[in-house]
Length: 227
Image (cartoon, helix red, strand yellow):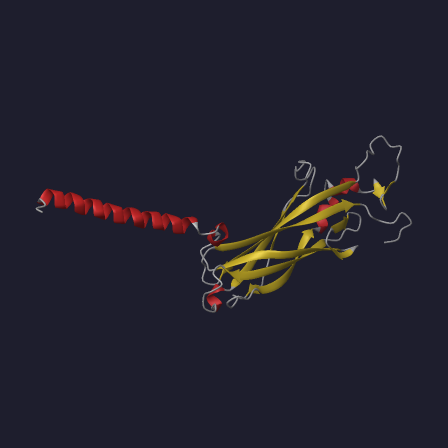
């Protein structure tokens, strides 16, 4: 059977296009199979917030941070961070993939949608961090705890927290007949969204991890003067 040169060229072009199509589809399939968490940064590791515990100056640690606006002290949060590999089958890591902690940010919001800073919730805060999360070996997560200010001293002397002073003492309205005292006034329940920022030693881009802590603000002081 005789095949002309033009026919041969057409067949060869079709064959090449088919091969290219297979390659493109394969690449797209591989890209589509990459989970979103693996795209968070350019390094081979991921950081996450495993747990947040509130540590109030007047109430001690707990799952909920009960912030006493009358004590004038900052309230902390204990943040447990974990570092793990995107691909758990790779060889042991090197110090180049250690994560150096840079800073933290706390943003408050309320579930009722009233989130104006300085009116409904305290202003957001940021602060420096220092510490290292060492790169994990295969199949092992490394963990570290950091302590941050979840509520700063000065926030208790500014609205809206300063507006809570003297309205509820020990959970009871000081003047229930006051027309300005409405049900729920004197207590603010908010969520503190805490974000930890860091970077790898080899500077493969920034790494962040976010967690949330419920914070209840009120004047929890004992009306008899106790703690």
